Length: 486
Image (cartoon, rainbow, N blue to C red; front, side):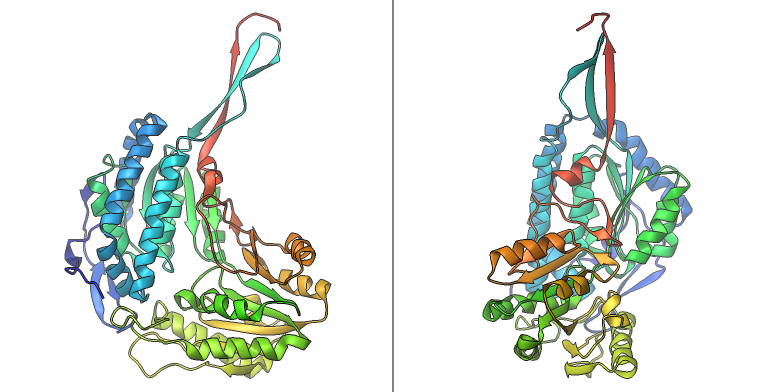
């Protein structure tokens, strides 16, 4: 395992207007795999939030006024600097949120790729063609940045999803105040240090603190023009309420409860290969995780055998220290207890059967065993509510219509997958599933070039792709009168 000189955690500070900002240590940062304290983080107060928003607003005219190629150049330099710090970033992320080190480093490479994509996208935005639609007027459409964007990011993929948030905002000419999650802020603070040498002061500001405190104050701030959040659905609703007073734009990528529809002709060998990551990647803390499997009664036992074998093959432990580890802890002991409570409730109250797992390993870390449940009912809480842990439920369907009905029967609509060798069925079912992404004989891959987002209560707007950049702009119609009829 290649290691680096450990990052000096005491040197990681919020960044406001290009300058370090450290009012004090209000929150302990706990390493999920060991339960040990890593460092402390400040709760940015109203004065600090005001300063960050003011710095972003001061930087806005200069950044927005740059030609797209110059903003692209800055983003490419950010990608290069970020990539040069991949080893340090990966180690810090692995310790901060409990990821296996190889996974954390891979996510850093993915984040660098997203900055490069958005650098290119900055130069490719288009609008309606100039034309004459009324006598004596020539009309054209401009795309202009919205202004100051508050970016609120989650703890499951701290750096990966930060690139999804700030990449399109900066590419479109906005300035950003980033508030990373309290549970996983360290790599964002290292990003702040990198950005000091790459971006003009105030273009990217990074503050820390709790969601109900710092996050809510930032989202409601009258100097913020747009709030871009990746997080839970209830958090998204709270952000919409906070944004309402100022009628500011919201861009929300929220929860998911992805169904997996397995038909009789599915390739179960490929399913077995894919499902390991689809269910248990990142300890199941993924909004697209394959959490609900629906299978015909005829193949139920086969699918249960596959899931049991995969779950029991998982090597669970501290992936920062052991490269053989497949799955680390969940983000915190509190979150681990929440997951356990959902599973215990399903068994006790709903009659669910534990196929494997449902145990808390004897360890000081926040570990939970990979778990497979069956015998659940469609209306059960564990089927209807996002769990965000290494747990999958298995139910049966009576036919294609029933499979689609059960898959759609939740409030979420972020992602889904269909498993069949029949292309006609694959096309028909994928068209009926209420989800922003539907995979066929696959589950999980995303691409920078393709939009990502949800239906129903899984969000508003799209991340990734040119669509994300466009959604960080305002459209302006300019009508030029020239006194000539056409």
